[in-house]
Image 1 (cartoon, rainbow, N blue to C red):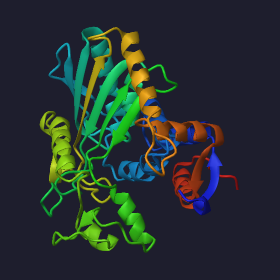
Image 2 (spheres, helix red, strand yellow; image 1 turned 30 degrees about the vertical axis):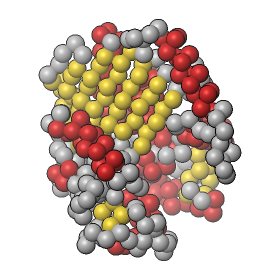
Image 3 (cartoon, rainbow, N blue to C red; image 1 turned 135 degrees about the vertical axis):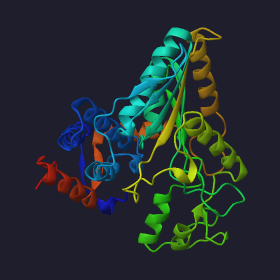
Image 4 (tube, rainbow, N blue to C red; image 1 turned 135 degrees about the horizontal axis):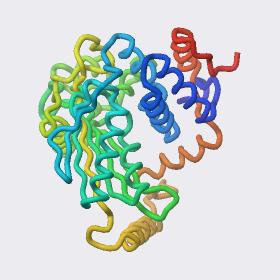
Length: 355
């Protein structure tokens, strides 16, 4: 978010309280409204603004268009001591995923491993939040989710997969756990849309036209589709993410998924998958954490390549963003404030903006 677009910064607690009241006024129950607010603010604290407070608008639009079930049953199906499938009943994605990771953590603590899938869900925000929750309890976690089709399998010129992110969390004795969260696409679609709005070209290699040719024209890229990260390698990982998220859980897959932003007649029917395991399955917990810390420090001490000042650990930059924004506040653009104000006015929630 550029400095010129920043209207004001707000403490995380202020925004969290506002979003909590906003989602509750929109019809979510108190617990789920708080989960959604906490999650979106945490994403923005980590500097992942694309999955943070900016998602408030589309979440509320889908609620308003009756595309979300605000009273889901969240039935647990096909349960074993180490696994379970949660039927999200078209509920909000974040509370559904929270329930899943909590159950995976519970099972991992009892048996050593917890595998929990989710079907018939919606956009679940930033996967880093879920693996962090497990890592903070000295557990190793892996999380994946599928998404609406915008990415071409390597070699194709039609979209089939979503950005299909994958994340992991590792406990350590450092100030924060090691947390990594990435999309398997070359770039987020939002960056291409932003380039078009600002009249900028995009780098070659991000996307292709409907004819299957690489392009630096964002308008043509939007007509076509995004390429997978690492070409065939990203495609291979995306295939696995889709398999665990949807084929394994019974959720919709590929082009069958409802689009988050443009589809207000079809449910998303997303799938998520969480694997949590105890970090002491093979060595003692403190031994494992010591080894993680030692390896991390050895990596930090490596000689950097030319032009690089510091070698960062996976997810370290996001934790630095978190510390900075927790102290100095989260920047919001004038456009974002106006959007939040409009929803607040609709639902009778007092604005956070200083008039």
